[in-house]
Length: 304
Image (cartoon, rainbow, N blue to C red; front, side):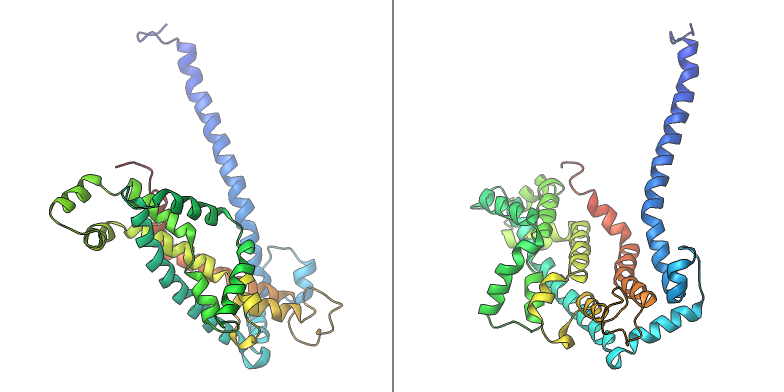
């Protein structure tokens, strides 16, 4: 028995069990890291190999930089470089949709966080239902609305629905409801601030993490948006990058050798490069905004 009343045997077991637990946690984390990182490594190396090597060579082997150049040339030479038109369309749709989503979600979240807001609870319940509803379930109603407004096959038919982002409203609501000091808002109201002045001069300067988080998720959702543009757009000159690349790949023998469009120089390396073009912008945006995203993810961790 030690002087502190703890048996020496228990004191010896403590560091041993702690070391085993740390090793087990490390093994689990490494397993998850490999599970997610290995497919990304394969995606990065795949365009560097030719079609045969991509099938039979080591999945994580590197071909050559000329393989990248060859796949890029084949991909960008399609229809006179139409892939650049799709990139431009994607940037336009994403930028406009992101601005609308942030402009709508942040004030809506602030309003819902106000306990004196009329119909606050029903609107919040509807927001939660819309948030958990699968995106595919809203495509048909959106299509009917867009058709009624005569916006089919127009950029606005893709941009305007991007402003409907209930998940962003919920994120903003969580931030304003839990992380905004209530005493500060009460003091501002005593000084005569209106609700708009509270939002503009008090809430917004303190809401940068929430704004960054909403913007990141809005960017991700809009950049990966496939189903709605696929439904509302019929002109291939208006396609965004996911829809355009899907149409290009489906028209070749890259993934279906029986396809009659096999004369186009789009094979498996070009498909891998196309997938890399979709993934890379999201990865870059996350790396540059990681600090703000991490701060936003802690929204609501402590109640003010």
